[in-house]
Length: 369
Ligand SMILES: NC(=O)c1ccc[n+]([C@@H]2O[C@H](COP(=O)([O-])OP(=O)(O)OC[C@H]3O[C@@H](n4cnc5c(N)ncnc54)[C@H](O)[C@@H]3O)[C@@H](O)[C@H]2O)c1
Ligand SMILES: [Zn+2]
Ligand SMILES: [Zn+2]
Image (cartoon, rainbow, N blue to C red; front, side, top):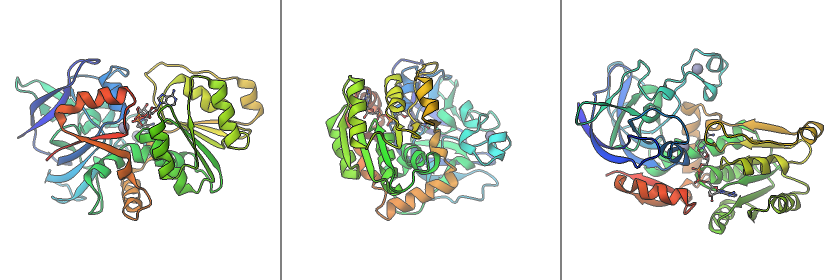
């Protein structure tokens, strides 16, 4: 049994608290990871703000990286000291999606129960009460115990903050472009929303060789960052949807072949669909609060053979994709470090959430000594 500090959400919609927790020793098929960095993803904010039903109390965080510190019995794929990024979706391996080779679509992942695959809970508070681990990894903590399959070995030399982002936003955004949409070289792309996920879509579009990449946000500084990553055009979105659509069409010869929505608001989902040209595809990456609906005109959608694609976790197979994205980063072709604008302590998580809610800044990362 060890102890760790962790950001715990006790009540949906209320502040997280930093608590000292006990952490069980890794059992068979589990490893203990010392967390070095945990990105602050908007999905954490959805959880914190109660947009999604989630059980509590729960140790927050799902975009984390560190080093393996201890192995449970029988763990063979990892060694102590190995740098890892954590996957927030461990596939069940037996459902229809998993058998078909689509682990990102697994509806029965143990990660969704926020426990170890056998149902065990590894964290407890001072009073002995159990504390769940978000997605079975709870990365906003100095240490965590996770299933072996959630700890993905990375090559040496990747900054832990970059490795953390590979655990969620990079894999989500780059994968949406390269794997979900399979954007061909020369295509035109628009990315709506330039947080960690949207900027990763921009980097993915650059890798894909998209000829036109229009970066859309309400914040001019984010559009500038997207341009520096290789976006060919920027668009400062306003509340005038017709004007946004017209601007997107003007920049892309009648509409982008692929529009990536990386916010999760009905208005921008509808903007993505309405701006499509004939045969174009809207790729929905942003997550709304549950039960939010969006609508679109059916006739032109069908008549124009347009498409809507949902993209969970960038269609990731983490043991395959995390090392690939890390290798691209080390080769200078995925400049993930430029998405990070602030490194904060665990105590600053609530102020990081305030900043994220306000749309300020780029990716913030909680770092641990
Ligand atoms: N599909 C997945 O597997 C997956 C994985 C991770 C995150 N997500 C979701 O992706 C979304 C984005 O995550 P993030 O961490 O990048 O968030 P973020 O808050 O950092 O980024 C959102 C961006 O959208 C911009 N924005 C907001 N409203 C806008 C508008 N009306 N028009 C133009 N720009 C606008 C903001 O300025 C910000 O730059 C969230 O909903 C998150 O839950 C999905
Ligand atoms: Zn995330
Ligand atoms: Zn499955």
